[in-house]
Length: 625
Image (cartoon, rainbow, N blue to C red):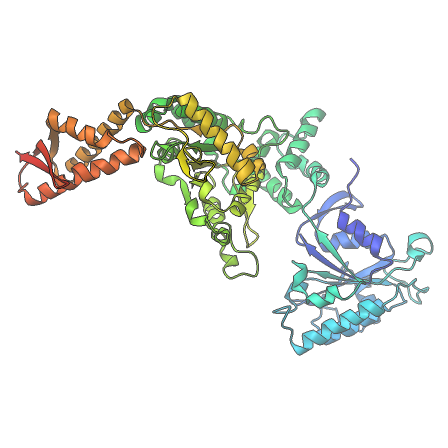
């Protein structure tokens, strides 16, 4: 495989004849694949720069950082002696602390030298000043001196040296062309230096180091592959497939991350077939994968009855949800795409009337997969209706108050990478915030204001919405689009249609709907026969609470049961939540009042024998024994 070149190093070579200083920002702390005498290897940035410029006839690098001062690279005796002689340095201990004033003078000597070609690398340049827009007097003078040098320096062809140099310059070819003795400023962000320094000089070039592309990751994976168990014995086609899979699964990662993944795999004795586990371990910090547990498959196989016991009357929605969950457990999400391993495990868009079990199904899924319904992460999207509220969810941008705290969503997912994440009433969020879900749904990751990345590849995302139940007519009035009593096919068709209209025309974001895909699960209205089941379930919960708190057994006469059922299920427009609200006002409140006034000492049974209402106050006839 031909070793691909880093673009920024290629740009550095190309601009040496016309630029005297370079501000290098971005992934400066990454590793870089460089051609060495013994073959390609991952090296730090300083080594990568040296290997590139050595071929251009440069004798050595002078490297400065605010912590350790000046040193030479490569750190060889002959190089140190030559640097000491040329620049009046004392590097016997390996480095020398210097002031900014001394560094400015040395910079002037270096860029104008005719003895040989040198490079000054200012490492950790982001830390030279405390605040780039509030310089001290000394810092201000230093950067003015650097700016003047950038404007007045000239490219040179070194004269024949009087003394042998550590790295002799070629007498012809590239080495004989006029090139600058450049200054390289290594910064995390370009704005870490004074803005006027880079804006007001055409001789200062900005080089941005981005994340490695597929070709570079593939070449790096080729170098790291022999460290995986079984690679040496594998056939060539299997090796090639492994290298390609390694490169695909590390999209958006640095080369240092690839090296760390290999180190984790080596320590854990993971083989070629475990590359996905190795990448996941690096992303979420857990080698154990709950999605691959045999017990989970057994639980899901028999899950339909368990779910329908809690979410009643939603058979089509439960079946589709289980299909998506089974696909998630089998690792088949996004299998139709060339590379879909970074996407969330599953995406569910629960749509339908209020109070029909959308949130309850999300809790039930969490209980099923993780054993605790409280393990899900819930975000009420009505809290994020304003554009600025996205800072809470995703973290404030750099430079704003609180950016170093991260976002509520990214922090929560980093803390619990294996989870169900519920976004309740998604249509109430600001459209600008919804844009962030594009990155989550497509790439399975999100970076907050601190620069920390949260990975969603092991989560199930659940969106709930009431879209399609009510719509606006031509006059702008809100009218009911689907009603109780409509056939489920009609409800599903109309709700899906309105969801499509909302994303395509109202938000103008069809791409978000496209990424949700066919994972829209439409819930039906609560039917009268289902409402009776929900009512009985809630009444049983009341009886259970009495047994736990007071050791009392609750009983109702058939007449009271029938009367209470009618009151609670007469209006089903608010679904199961409406049934619960009616049960609370028509039964739990008068029951609590009656119990408060009744002597329950030594009693074991409560019988509700009558129910009456006067002036909208419900009264229960209570007998205890």
